[in-house]
Image: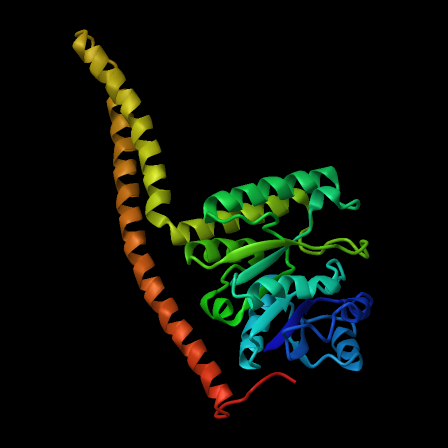
Length: 324
């Protein structure tokens, strides 16, 4: 059983040593523990510090590609390196590395495909009241849309089994956390939460520049991912809303017609007809999007088979590439 702890980093030369020192190298039930650092185009000495501290694998992006893309690059590399379990943590030492065994336990017992660390944000002293409120609200929305029971949906401290990593395909350019939960829920993967500790804050978050921008990006991710996996439902709701609104002016026009006073109210008929047509077109778009979804599922099945085949080839010694 091989565990690889991956750490996406951007200018983390100061905090990376503490993060690495907190990661256990021996875990019951796991034969090998390795560490992989994805240096996302840092302008400091992040990659050099990682190598000097004995990190097993270092990948360096030539330019800053963002957290979600770096996470995806790291997962693909971990699969090529033969990981049975992949744990993701942050390079700013936010998460307590000593809780990595706790994340792995449900996977080792065969009870979960994905385990997410619950930071219990209400008890974290350095989290502002606004951040705690946003975390609660966002997690509640994601739980409802993904039909899962994840307490801390945006926590980046999470473990994946090899099977889950093969099935997940992160496409968001902003954040992988919410997308992964929605995908896991729609693909019927077993997902669990475990309480984890956090370390004192060492620096401000670089994930977003302002709260409004963060909310906008998270909402965009939620809408995009939910529409990808439930397109017919999304467009049905939109089409129904347009149709109901369009029915109101038409009903108004018919009411005047029944009273023999239709003159001057033709605008209601035109407006209602336009809205009803928009509702009908929205229903049709939803139907087409639902059919496209089946093509996406077929493509994902092909991609999963290719990943699984690559892993089997590595186990057979036919192909053993990997970052160094």
